[in-house]
Figure (cartoon, rainbow, N blue to C red):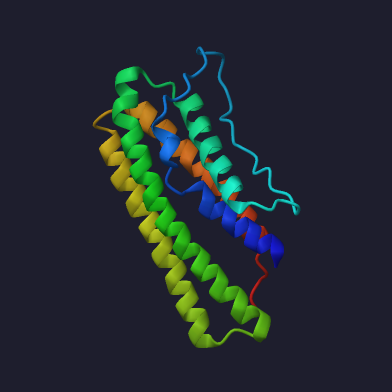
Amino acid sequence: MKNVIVSSLIAVALALPPSAGADAPQPKPPAPQAPRTPQVPSSGATAGDSSMDALRDKLRADKRYVVATNMELTETEAKGFWPLYDEHQKGLSKLNGRIATLTSTYLDAHEKAPISEELSRKLLNDAWDIEKSELELEKDTMGKMKKVLPAYKVFRYAQLENKIRAVVKYELAASIPIAD
């Protein structure tokens, strides 16, 4: 159960809006190199971590750094990109709150007894609604980004975001028991 909570918090932390210090200058991406594999931050979470706020801040900063490093934005592109990125992260934060609620509801029910037909249907519908909302958010954000970035950079950002979210979703899924 503790791993489920940590995984849920990591999932939520990765999509929280950047902290107040996020307006600081962004790191410059490294000079172009041979084809690279996008860098994905490790959570750094251990059973002994006592400050979830510190972990959440670190994950947000790590994610922002990974995106900044891999996007290779010009100064002009960065001015248009980062406000849209922050807006997207706020939307993901709301979705992650819904995921955390759904996960908590499921885990509470799973601990008590087999899950009822009614709750199973509700959880499934809620999960579908979250997935639909995530796709709508992504389409909306990418549509706005197409106005400030070349298409290949919009696609690159979509890839980065999808890879990061896939890692988080995998960790969360691996820690949630299958329904009885």
